[in-house]
Length: 50
Image (cartoon, rainbow, N blue to C red):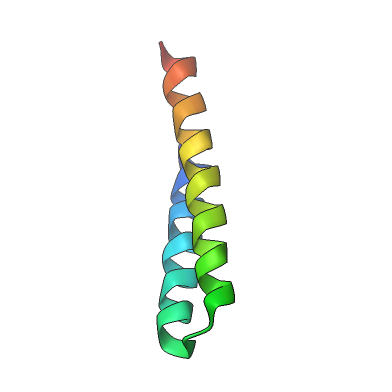
């Protein structure tokens, strides 16, 4: 689960860099999608550890 969270965080960062470089709004939508998915996975991971 932790590896998946790390991959999602890196994907969100890469999409943010691509959005900043190209100025395309589509990349920022990807950042939001990756960030929300990463948060959901992280919360599920925290709940499973308790």
